[in-house]
Image (cartoon, rainbow, N blue to C red; front, side, top):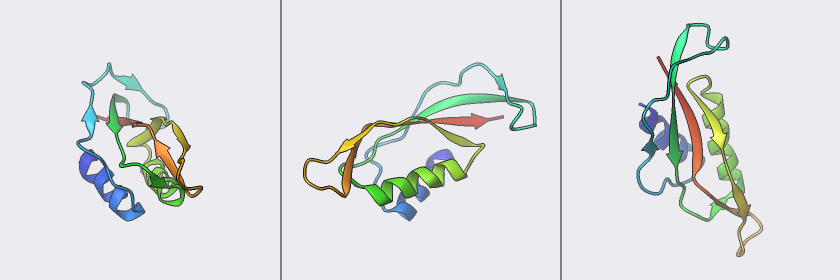
Length: 101
């Protein structure tokens, strides 16, 4: 379901996911008072976008992920200015913390 959601967010925002979304094995259960339903498992997902990316589209994609909280939250991003355009960026793989029961 996470892969389906991320692909949907990419389509809605106008970015393209390059290759498969990578998942690490689940970490130890954590308790989050924000979630209010007890123990959850945290699993990082790595999403690589096709570069360069329009800044506005990138921000839409990030917002869609963040609005999906508490299921998915950004854990790491790194971007740099595109050499070819002031309206585009180059994105390193995005790390997303996926919370599951």
